Length: 128
Image (cartoon, one colour):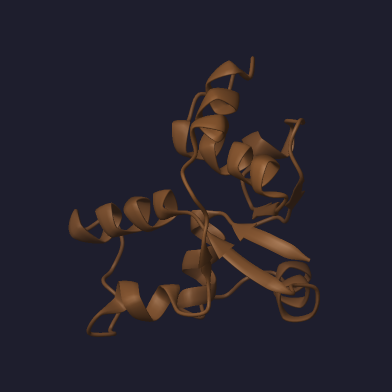
């Protein structure tokens, strides 16, 4: 399966942080192609820079953490879809990740309980 990882899933995978067995098993056995959004990179880089997350020990952690991923484009089509959804969930990054998954034919893998309740895009929710 071609997957787009949500920021938190990418972070857990990158730093080999604990995750529940269903998510770990899915990532280990069901993924054929790994995708990442530049928005996830921006989100986690911001959190590290502003001390909201500990800095990874790798020297150039962004390069190391994105190795093996295809980078999803930020397209006008996805932006339009993300903005037009009538969801009450207003996080623009989550909206763009969902729309990017839809436009690029990917499945968004996430642990977000707000996204779990939404439809209109391909996704799998796993408890954090």
